[in-house]
Image (cartoon, rainbow, N blue to C red; front, side, top):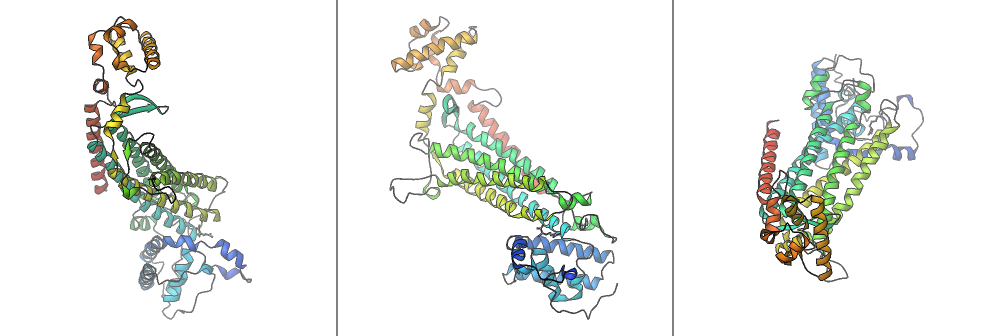
Length: 477
Ligand code: ARG
């Protein structure tokens, strides 16, 4: 195939698809149709995809090596221009693909006009979006690791801190703060798995599917896939151009991660309130009130909780976007980008700010320990004491329940009762019942997954080992 080296560099028509049109586009339609205001964010992905495509076309002798070189150099120059903020994005050129292609034609003439051989914007945009999504997964995975390591470090620092564990937000049984923090680490560990799985499904090349049915040139789909770092190629051209499941995967994993962040935020908001007084925020991570001089607000946690709403919304949007689309590509899919960008940005900043805030928090260990045993939080341990001396658990439960009611009426605690009073409640009580206390309650819960200090320390070590092992897997990949 010969290169048209005398090819004209005259300005490309405003609409690169305008051949069959004789009338102009309505200005409202131009504005409505254009995505350049947001999809310009994909310029690096778009240029990488085009360079891979041009190299493949030349290797299959569909274009000449001269044209390939002109295309690659032209695209690299355009990328530098955009990097330097010197590129003029034009709304009449609709989207990132046509903006770059038209600019390329202006620069290099006919070679630029050959770039779109054997390709459609439909496989092009799917490729760009997948490249973006893959990089997003990688960044999110890094931030999730940061969050997990912040939680593990805090669990180590606060290894001695005891607090009430809650059910129904009522004090239930004493736990270690570290145990509570490790519960969040477990959530973010599952988020890590979900994003790793989402990344694997993202990392498939749609390029070469053409508009919908494949293309008529002897292209090499494996070559472009490999050059772009994809694990394989999408095997059905209709699915390749219309599939946005990978975006739903990301929204779904992100929504759940945001829900985890939101739950943690909610706890922090409670803990730093005067009602709890369990924890304190560093000045660097708190804000004041414009009217009430005494206020120190947990805005970071509140905003994280609030932002989880928008990510959940984006998940709903992504599902609704797909639900009525017939095969294959429809312009509806242009609406996939803003929510995807928003979800990724929101999750990244939320993870970053929350994992930066956690190590700066301090805990009021004396208050939390006091709260840990208050409100009859050791009642289960008294019932267990009896059950371990062969009293049927239901009978023990009943006896301690009555004791609690009596103490409550008299304004006393279970620990204040004498052996005689205990024995009056149930004859199976013996002198060692007076040893039931916070330490014994914690130490007794040494089943796997329990809150006994040695068990929690081992769980923290195990979580750290998992995190480290995942890190070295990542660096091998
Ligand atoms: N801007 C479009 C999008 O975001 C690019 C694909 C357009 N394809 C088409 N056949 N009009 O989906």
